[in-house]
Length: 610
Ligand code: AGP
Image 1 (cartoon, rainbow, N blue to C red):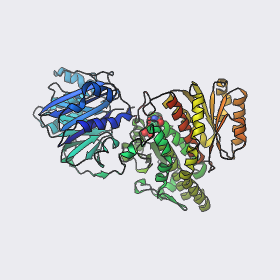
Image 2: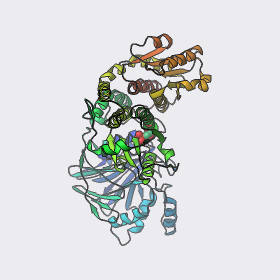
Image 3: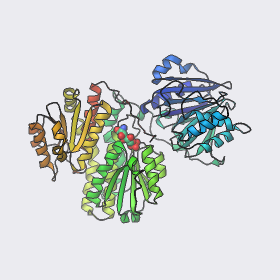
């Protein structure tokens, strides 16, 4: 996904732009570029490939200038070419623009501009912005020209803009695409996310939709599209730069898997004690309202959608509220009918997933209350929703979501307890013991991580297999889906998740001696004996069984080729513990295959296009 960094400073900015882009590499991209403003003229360089490759050719670090913008591009309009890489300029080369998002009416705007004599050099939607500003500059200040240009744009944008005749100013704007301002000492920044500038400042201003910022080295101002100045809050971020780095692990994904005891402990901290669950002030939904809701609809994509399915199971089982889960991308085109007593929950690690944002907006149009479960403070989803529960996983850099997932499950579990308590579907004693069990989870996780040797052995034995099945039931069916998704994402091996009992309705035809089948089979009172039967069915057809079982289980090790143990806990919470061996298995297989684990091909961390 595209990323932007911009700096205005009292010193040369090339190193900061370079470092900023390096910190954005995790998003996945195909080309990079920078523009420096020096002595009222631009030095602009760009190229196709990873930052280090382009750096070898152009050496960004040799450029002078106290003000500059940089971009990594993940193509949407126009092929992967140097001409299409950002920044883009107007005809006179006095305006330079970097852009994330999609300008939906760009083709109409381009036709109008071409008729007026503008000459385009790329196939991108972004270039129209530079020409549109140029077109509006006649007779107006650059600030006014930017306002007028933005009013004509339809679609999403996060923008960094330089104007050669305004050599002390960096301009920025956003609409439905993330952009933050970083407030430094004698320098100010713009960036697509917080980690990319954390090395320089932890003071951040979140731009809202249809806002324009003007940054100078010692000050910044934010305006609406009519030029009215707005008051903006400076937020102090407590993520350290180190928190966003690998900390000695080979990959971010592995580091993030190992961070889960801390991430879950932080997520629970101050929220669950004795028989009380209390969320932070952003939660925003009253107890009175929560007692009355008749239905819950959860919207999400990818891994967050799997968390939603676990949440559905937890809420229906324990709080007894009818709950439905939909893919955000499908919901928005379904013309769904929402009852006003439905609570809509959006789950998103990034808070910037375009489909989830659009689905949430669609739900809001129908007048329902909305709650988001999100990892990124101040992200778009959190600002659209009526209430927010933050997962406190810290920055997740690996494209494959790991710690964000298990912290989402932890939050859903706490929410379930709160709802169960308010609606009296559980008594005080049950609530207390559920809280005790979740508080134990961070202490139980190291035991799961210690199973890594056996998981690594499985990876060594089976990393060359080209297919695999993941089977689970009840609360662990979504964990099977998530295990299969993790493997696909990072290793590029085909994997499918199924409810274990569905195997006999089709997938069983696939079983032979080359097929590893991962069973998520912790002990439970409902389906354990049935899963044992499913394991037999796979074994009798020559399949390879890797089973996740509860410690002390004597039956599964007799049948499975490999057993990975997780500690005893409540059935609903087994989903959190069981997710971790599957993350490790996917990681080790991908690593054995030499995959780019943190930046798997074709994937982006935040899917900010639809
Ligand atoms: C996770 O491993 C995936 N890369 C992806 O499915 C992700 O969960 C999905 O794009 C949703 O992202 P979000 O949680 O930031 O909204």
